[in-house]
Structures are given as C-alpha cells and as structure tokens.
Amino acid sequence: MDSRSFRLEWSNLSLWRGDRCLQSNLSGSLASGQALTLRGPNGCGKTTLLRSLCGLSLPETGEIRWQGELLSRVRTDYYAHMAYSGHSNGLKSDLSTRENLSFAARLGKRERDHAELLLGLNLQDCADIPVRSLSAGQRRRASLAAVLASGTELWVLDEPYTNLDRAGCEWLGQRLNAHISNGGLLLLAAHQASLLDPGIETSVELSGIAA
Amino acid sequence: MTSAFLLMMRRELTVAFRRWADVALPLVFFSIVCTLFPLAVGQNAETLRNVGPGAIWVAALLATLLSLNTLFRDDFDDGSLEQLALSQQPLTVLLLAKTCSHWIVTELPLVVIAPVLGLGFGMTGNGIGALLLTLLIGTPALSLIGSVGAALTAGLRGASGLLALLLLPLTVPILIFGARAASLADEGIAIDGPLFMLGGLSMLALALTPFATAAAVRVSLD
Image (cartoon, rainbow over all chains, first blue to last red; front, side):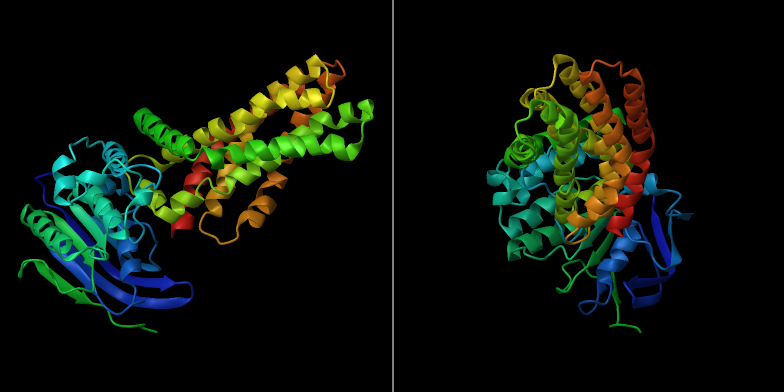
C-alpha cells in the first residue's frame, strides 16, 4: 500500500434517480485511516451516493474531489487507488473464482497470491469451479476477495455483509479494521450493526426521500 | 495498454469457449437463412446466382445483429462492466478488445462458412473469392459499429428491437458495397473500387467507434 495519505471530499451533491430527487446538499470527506458508514432506509440513495463517489453516476450538482483535484480530471489515478464491490458481484459466471481474481489482479497490474485470502474466506475448496455453481454467499465472498486482494487504499463496499454467514461477517469485520489501521479508507453502506472498532467509524444517517 | 488488450481478449475468448452453444447460434442462424433463400426463390439457376451475394450479406448482417444483443448485456448484468469502467486501464482499449473477440468468435466463422453457402447459390469461383474477401474486409465494420449500439442499449430491457432500428440504417453502406462487389466479381468485373471503399469504412469504424463505445458504456452505467 502507498504510504501517502489520501483524501476524498464531496460537497453539495444532489442525487436524482429518474425524476425523483433522493438527496440534496450532501457534503462530507474521508481521509486515510477513516471509515464512513452510510445508513438509512431502503431507497434513500445510499447506493447512488456510493456510485457517484466511484464516478459511475454523475451527480446532478456538486463536486467530488480526490486529493483536492476534481474526480473527472484524475480518474485514472483515482481508479488506481480504489476498489468497489456493488450489488452485482462483478464476476464472470463461466470462470472460476481463481480465474476471476487473477483477471482482476492483472487488470490492476497487481499480481499476487490469493491462497491466504481464499483460505480466510473459506473458498479454497471451490476456487476452481465456475462461479455459476457457487452459492450466493460464496459469490459474495469471491467478490469481496477481489477488493481485499486489490491492494488499493480506498475500498467502497455496498452492503458487503449481505448473504454472508456469521463467521464470514466477523472475518470481514477484522479485515476491514486491519485495513483502516493500515491507513486505508473505507466507504460502506450497511444495515447491520457496525463490526468496526469504535472510534474509527463515522456514521451518516441519510433521511428518507427529501422531496 | 497492449497487455490490458491481450488480457481482456484472453478472458473473452475463454468465456466464449465455455459458452460455445451461444457462440454457435449466429453461425447456425446464418446457415439456415442462407439455405432458406433457394427454397423460397426457386430453382432457377440464373436467379439464384443473382441473389446469392446479396442474400448471404443480408444473412451475415442479421446474424451479427443477433449476436450483438449479448455483447455487453451479460457483463452489464453481472457487474463486470462496471468493474471494467472502474479499472485504471483505458476503457476504450478494454472494450475494443471485447469487440475484437466478438469478431473472432462470431464473424470469422461466418466468413469461413460463406464460400460453402455461395456454392449452394451456384456462384462462380471468382464470385466466391470476392464474397470471402468482402466479408473479411467488411465484417469488422459491422462488429465495430454494432458495439456502439450494443453499448447504448446494454442497460435497457427488450432492447433487441431498438438495437436493430439503431444499427440497420448505419450498416447500409457496408451492405451495398459488400454485396455489390461480390456480385460484380461473379460477373467477372474488377472490384478494386468497392473493396477499397469497404476497407476504408472498416478503418474509419476502427478509428472512431471505440471512443463512442466507451462513452456509451459510461452512459449506460449511469
């Protein structure tokens, strides 16, 4: 991991889905060693906010800055330092977990050994069968493995605990804590009670439909 | 950049190889449509020879359209398209690699089987050679132009009709030059002109469409 410190800021964001305004005037920031958890009822715009902060959706108004520069200007640099796991797993169902992870790693130019990670996620026995034959929870584990193995600083996780069993949640919580204490950044949308150490996490409660 | 291109090609070809049934579908469709023509038009050798190049080109166009539906749809649904958009590699290059592998797995088999179908229409050796050549030079343009349409409609439900409406008008020049050149050659006339034009269209598509495809994918993901 890079030893520089990183900073993501956003100001005056308004988020629209079709012709509905979900949120307006959202501002915030996240720096190295911090975690931010978005909470709120279904449909309040958590995913839309995360996707905007990833640069996947364009917010209606407002600006997002990475290291003080507008996101649209530093896209490549930003993507070299972030990894995202959303509702869809981002895995090709005809490839095995190992093949998927190796593709993701090589695309990010970070060739690494996944054995320890697969072991921790309890995927070592099914790493070579097509993702299509995995259960929903195993697929989620594989998708998280791609983020955990990415070696990037900023992790953006949209409801990462979904479909995970109790042991999986605890394991993930430990990994996230370790990531933060190594100076990583974490953006999370979650409904579950926090599994992060107290003191490192800020929670933002998004209200229901604003307008 | 080259390594990202090759990496992406390798993944696409592996996936295609494991889903060979999906890949074979356009080829089977192409062969069936081409064999329907002689049945419908009748057995007059002269008529068949005249419609041959045109029929084969139209069938190739429709088979391409059939395969374009799934070019980005699967990746959109399983989230790998957004992962590509979030990678530090240029999206243009990654998507161009996808389009190239689409050409290899879909169009190349059509080109290879076309001479056999041309024989069925009673085309001469000259005409069959020209048909092979025009398909080889013209189908890259079909894949490239098609990728823009496929990218625009990736996130839409029931987009196959829309995709056809969007793409068919754009492919008319390729169809005209391709089919016309093949039938001119069948009559023994030199076809350098149409061939250069087809090559030019493919080059133009190669230069312009990758950027449009990448932009369209970003719009679809929004």
